[in-house]
Image (tube, rainbow, N blue to C red; front, top):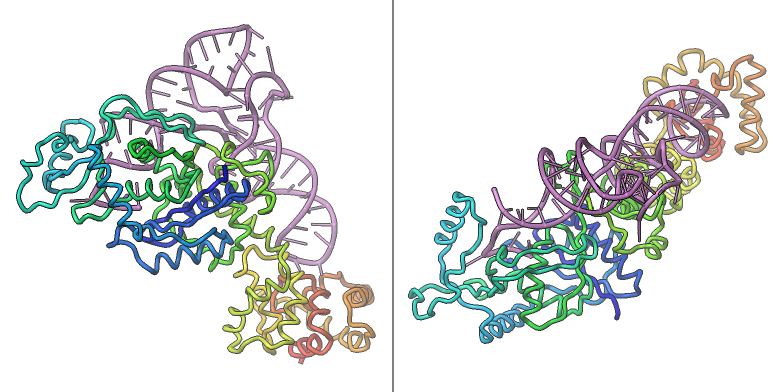
Length: 466
RNA sequence: GACCCCGUCGUCUAGAGGCCUAGGACUCCACUCUUUCACAGUGGCAACACGGGUUCGAACCCCGUCGGGGUCGCCA
């Protein structure tokens, strides 16, 4: 059997962290088994679905590099097919028309709640004579839920979950306007698309019982269900708008790398022994539903940052330059010139060691392309004022005379000069850093000098000495 | 409220009856390295929710309590 999974978001908002992880698990599971990963947009609620949301979801998935197989399925396009299925159920006596008004339903629920009874539709139209139908009321179609026995979901993550059937009321299949509901559409689509494994959030667990009843009524084979625990905010509550920066796109904007995001999301609810840094290939090889945890987890930015820093240090300089270039260009007011890009590329090795996201990387990289004369920050200015300028002045000729403007030679020279001046290396290196970078924190100063080159280095030096 | 799920360091987790005086990672602290900041390395703080069973033996099995979460829509 070829494994077919799907990610089925509803396009009512952006792709959030929880959805992203669901997508990741589905993707990983499919890739692990050499199967298919399908994407289906659950847009049966016409009022709330938007094209912008669809675009945002696709965009988020693409950023995370979770590629789907085949065409994107838009659920609503199958409305006719879903309607047919519902009518078939009606003909088979497995569904019926219900003429309850919304007011009636609200009242029913309120009374049930007040009396402490389970809140659900009481099935009042289930066996009623259709001749009783009030005139002018468009009925909904409800599914005749088995009233006795229990429904057992053998969940791939949660294990067997039993729900007594009397707990489940007769769900609506077709709305009064004839459009299918989600409950109907998922079942039909999952069947039609040959979905073998339904991997989704825990919040769908009870839905699985209802859906399983529909599968049975239709005589269709049940897919394997796996309900993964939800991700909560740092405060332990369900992820919501209060927890800012939920959209995966927001993480991209905050300078996170997709591979870091994938690694982080993977470790939320899933583990492979003590492994922490897991490449995507390795994840595909190792991933399985059986090792998915059962308890919800909290989103922890610190860990994400740490992982992002790790992947940043691994990233190719050229790629990082590309990521950093737009923001730098904006700050500079012009698109980067070839020599600037070259300088950034050369400096990236030292730069990427010191940033945990590309925003920080951008800030740290700025001095390489900044126009002279550089502005010194407070601490840097102090370094120069506290005798630093004099010491630099004293070694300036030695720089001028240096043969090879390369890191080892530069370092040797400064060490030599420090000894000659009878000062510590730092007393020379720090003012140098202040003059060349405008800051007291930067990559190794000899690295910086080599990247900057003789001409630029001396020019920056003179800016502060003159 | 009813039903369902969950409960190991602050966080993510390993653990599938003896290998556990509970391991790793992040955070935090100290030290080492060091021209700064980082990185890296070393060390440290820190957990089996509670109460009963079962068993020679329980973080692991059972029951209860408490706590957290989810679902109860003509939303998905």
